Image (cartoon, rainbow, N blue to C red; front, side):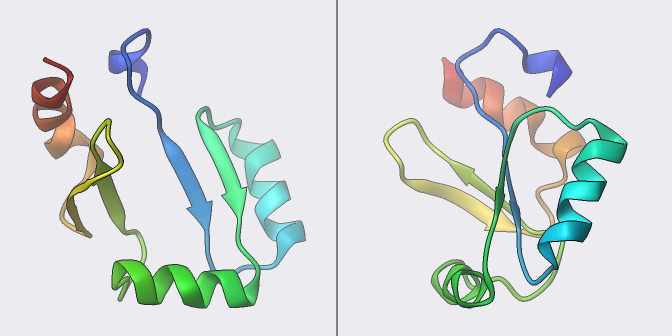
Length: 89
């Protein structure tokens, strides 16, 4: 995220299946950048169903027009940087 700062890219973090107090405590402790969203139990179920999430962590690469480019646990941040840079061109 730091290496792509200032470019037209957003990092969004969605918390699924957790307690809100624990989520807030983690945000305070780790001071993570990006946009963070907490999902209720029902919202978590919907996200899992819509994006076929079967495990955590799970990554979704979304293009500038909202299309899902790729998704899965294999999209680790250190492996997807070049793909993001390609989409920015």
